[in-house]
Image (spheres, rainbow, N blue to C red):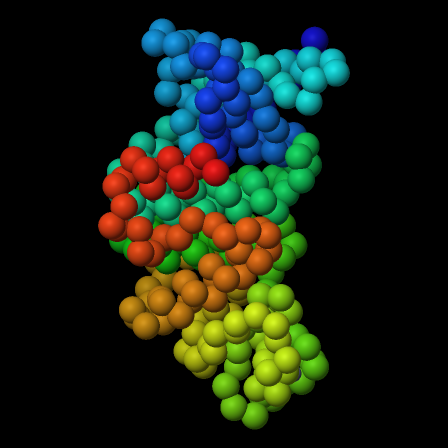
Length: 261
Ligand SMILES: [Zn+2]
């Protein structure tokens, strides 16, 4: 049985059979892979807590001929990211980032820059004073390296550079649309203020290492969140967990919902 060794990040993990888990990893060398961890739910499992979502580890997998699922052989933790699981906002932010990396990459396709953006995103979210905003900015980084960056320099329908008023954001068109074209867009397109556009453009130009230091006013933050969340949903092809409006729910349930969908 061939053996794979690679740095890996746990994207999600679900129960399987009586005592096992099926774990989706985003790996540096082989992209997204799924593996069965035999006995992972037993009290004295050798995997311990290493199969929790967001854990960064050294992973060893066996490939079974004729089976699309790998067998998880060994996991050694590099970074456990415990602080990411300490609040609803960090859980939701990290889960959005993990889900996005999984959604925009194909099984078995290594995309090292997405891998590093995910890792840097986790580090930034757990150290951020504003985890929701930090997560949203790193979502853009993941999209950038996966080749889905939105275009904000013109109308993405008519290619015009003047809008004759406000600009709108169309997820379907992949960026800004003008006042005339927005009327023909099938889905809702939020208006984007000049301040939001300027901030957005700045983010897309800047060195990712400086992202966690960016600050935004509450209104700008809300506007950015709405635009980025709509766009991410569109690229991912489904509605992703939200970082806002989750406070009424009980933490464990949000955690489950965010990482086990
Ligand atoms: Zn237009």
